[in-house]
Length: 74
Figure 1 (tube, rainbow, N blue to C red):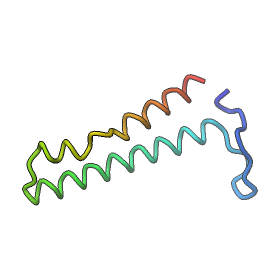
Figure 2: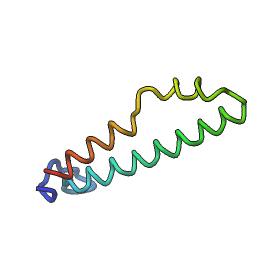
Figure 3: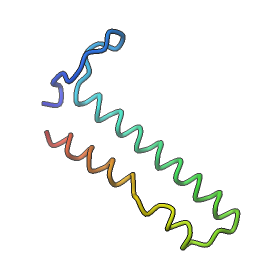
Figure 4: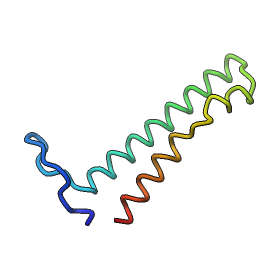
């Protein structure tokens, strides 16, 4: 199923679940890197940990990981 075509792009050709999973993994890593940068900036500005934590209540990384796991099980 992972190599099943899910779309066709005239430039990139056929797009598979593996392509989608790879793209989502890259997005996840970019998000984690951005989150680390923002946290470090806030810490340098001496923002307290409680405030920093409250900014990341909606955990996008976990949601992306869940989507990736579901796609990998297909």
